[in-house]
Amino acid sequence: MALSFRGGVHPDDKKDLTNKKAFESITAPATVVIPMQMHVGAPCKPLVSEGNLVKMGQMIGDSNAPVSAPIHASVSGKVIAVEPRLHPNGCMVTSVVIENDFNDTLHESVVPKGSVESLSADELIKIIRQAGIVGLGGAAYPTHAKIQSCLGKVDTLIINGSECEPYITSGHRAMLETPEEIIGGIRVLMKIFRVDNAIIGIESNKLDAVRVFEKVLPQKNSPIKVKVLKTKYPQGGEKQLIYAITKREVPPGKLPGDVGCAVFNTDTCAAIHNAVTTGMPLITRGVTVTGGAIANPKNLKCRIGTCFSELVAAAGGFKDEPFKLIMGGPMMGTALTDIEIPVIKATNAFLGFLQYDDIYSKEQVCIRCGRCVTACPMNLMPLYMYMYYHKENFQEVLNLNVSDCIECGACSYVCPGRLFLTQTFGVAKIRLNQHNDSDDTKKGAN
Image (cartoon, rainbow, N blue to C red; front, side, top):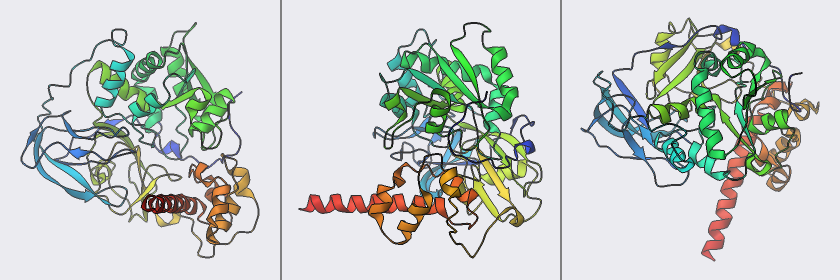
């Protein structure tokens, strides 16, 4: 029986547009734009200047902050600018612009680091940090920091292969095409956490990936097991995945490590394997390019810093004027204002939608149906959080645990009144943080 969690929704996944299409690698563009902010935490400071020559895999940005991850050149060539450029988040972010010399000259640091058996846990964590690896399921939290935060707490290692967002199939294709790399990364994590077993959770709409892993892994007594999950959104949320597989509940305000679990994405595992075995840092990304506006939906492999316009061209261009552009999935992705914006580490999909793909109502009204409560995978009360927010009663919003909202979009999806629930809760968390920061400032002044 497929494992699952409470709440959630069942959107039409639209994965059939690309789930049978193998990755195609596109040529690195003449110019790459590499933002110094691609992860949760402190942005990096550029380590190069205009006019410098750089090699592929060379570190070009770093930070001393504990939560940050280095950034590397995805091509070899000449730095032609270090300046603010438009980022997927809509802001102007300091970026290193490199003119590609098309030689792909490797930096001297890109060499195999040794076997997993010969390296200590500390050495492996250092390699992961130096490679600039972040969570590749969309969260982009620096992987070395995540590992360090739960060292000594973990008895269950969970690998997230659910890829539950509609349209996205880049992770699915990676499981089909590079299972050995994923397994290699899992073995690295098992050594770091000193656990003897790991569990890969894969949704039931990807049974071909389940069969691939079962074929690659030893048939008997394998320390790495595959568990089939019910196809439901947001199955890939850490807390939902932990509950589905272990039935452990992560309490409000707590982290997976507090219940003995650590969760890593399959793509993250593959990046870890490559960093150890080849020394290659995170400079490429698998991206699903799809949606009603895309002429020929595809799964593409590209260099980080490639503009979305290059991906659209590789997928046959737009078949009609797009109404909405999204980086990531339709439930949790980021709306884009332009296609001349670069692919970053967090990019797993680019969606182009036509106007008829969007359901929008100018007359938003709550009818007190309670569907949002039933759908919420975090067991929250969205209708009351929404009501109290608009009454500016932030204490009640806080009391209702809005900080636990994972902004999955399930409540907005089921709402017949078409309320902007998810967006409201995102703004509420920002305003609450600003209020807390203001209070701290006042206390400091006193």
